[in-house]
Image (cartoon, rainbow, N blue to C red; front, side, top):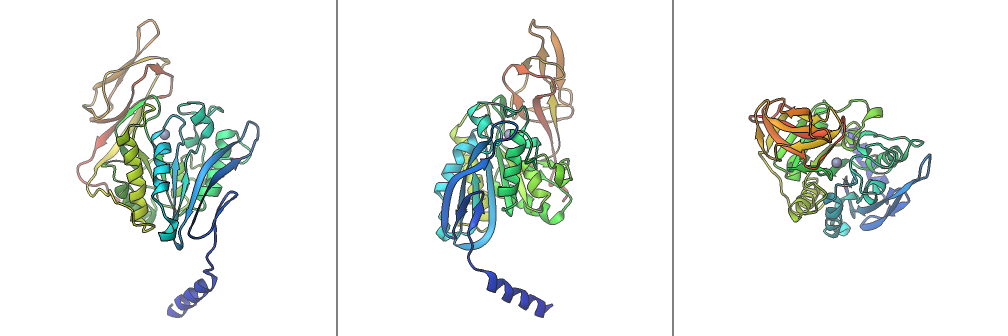
Length: 348
Ligand SMILES: [Zn+2]
């Protein structure tokens, strides 16, 4: 074993020629930052180009991907990432950061919630398809050029343009103990003090659906963070994204950035998205952060004339983590997200 290890160390030393970090057509030499565009080619519909910065540390270490703007009306991470970039000095870094400033430009510039112009939710089509529609091709390029080149990932979201949301993270439990524990430590490092435990994500890497799940199923610890909503860029929500990203960078030992680690967050062991059973006009009856009992009225869907089509009630006691706070309700789409608070810590 020792001989093997020695041989490994010697051969690793021989091949440790500092090499550039290549993302698409961008190539950052060790100790350098490069910003530019990740091209998504035209296909059955128009392509796009994704703004990316590659900050390649002078010394080797983890490669953290920070993904902003997967949903087009979620702005806090898009505003936060240039602030993170400004704090990074690759000459002093051991490891690298790939910043995806805006994963979904067609949805951002089109001011779209949930879906891109092709009618698909980018955060449900991973790992994507080279010959698919626009959202699928974006996912394909981000999987190959960003996720495959990273060792860790943070997917940065907030409430969409219609969602009033309290800050929280998702800790995904995949069944791979080493990855799950590393993901848990990243969640604590990001610093949001409410954490939803998610054991329900798909297990097939060919149908990973979500950005963070694509990383986790490839053995890369990841988390999804939520801070902000309603199309706002309030300083508290943006600052939480910035501070969380910098804190994960410090946690991974990439740079000596400030930490906002939490030790004892509130954990939620059960959660449910309540959806519209009918298309109509939504009248919420609760606000974000409100504590509800099982059966508490969360709101009603009316028809355009005022007749009640649906009463939405809490399925169990918990907290409202987000509630849709604008009137449109479309059958099948979210109206509220309720989570049940766990006493103590979740099982690993
Ligand atoms: Zn989102």
